[in-house]
Length: 492
Image (cartoon, rainbow, N blue to C red; front, side):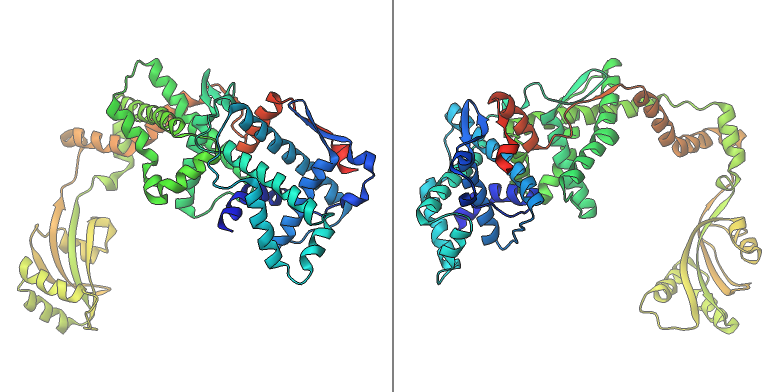
């Protein structure tokens, strides 16, 4: 049954994703009505009787799969309309497979799959329940076997159509996801980017779109917030004559490689296949994305090189951030509330860096049980005004490498070791250092602002970026096979 479950996945998933509903029995239709045309695919007309055979098999499989089948008339009509489109799609896929002479990789015939599935149903529905199940959907044993074989053949043909070995060039002909300043981004390339972004977001938040609407919303974000932005920068870089090396392109293309490493090549390839991307498509899209990402990096570097702050900007920065240029001291301290204990610590440290660090490691450890020690910590780098005056005044008089004890404050008694010191900076003596500090603090915002100037003027025209793969397939198949649907006939 493993093979049967696999072959049924695509069709049954399509059935369940639309909605669930009840099924009208063939016996409720007049003979004339059953012979009415409900769909035309490639010049072949399909009758209501043929459609209802497909429809009732789908309903029967839904019930056998453990799902409830509602019977409300409005839901039934809506569901029939949706399944009619699915029916025509699968018939068109079968026509496509036959026209292209595509060979299936499926290991069994439709008849063998049908027989195997029927046997499993008989085991599931014993003691007469099997015949009752078939009767509920207008079948006897013979008609159900025939309907199941037809259904399985559609399933095999759809599996072949979606195969990674099937050339879907015609599917993407004339289809552009969107354009940026006239540069067309192909649907294949955008699908590649979108699949990887979906997995990237999953690795960040463990969330994945749960509906078609959510998926399309994600696609819109990918297009609006990310890829169109990168392409605007890419076009700008080309206009500036920036050239890319093969090494830079490969580095840019490796952006999503961590996803393949983490999720596994088989899983990622299965999603590419669902979006009709072959191995060659993926390689081509990966290279183009590498060019886009590499150009983004090169333009960013170019903008950074052009960042030249004026003397007035540096002076304003210096005067507005006085604490950044004050003298700073870096120190460790050991704190106790007890004066006698403070004297013991002072003696124990020998007022040397080596002696201090020996007891510091003991009292700062998580295993320390000496309750007289309130804290043993690295205070890091701090300015005079950051600490209370009773602490800062003696500490800022200390030299690097000096240990001083019995420094009383409102918190207790401190044993202090100064391990670094930074002298104050002035514009006159330290201009170049202050300039570098200004550039470091402001270059990211400068680059961002310049990028916004470039991208804000980009002209973006939407194409088919929101199309899901099944919609893309329908769009091509409908045009290629002149598909016509007669909903009113199918649902009456």
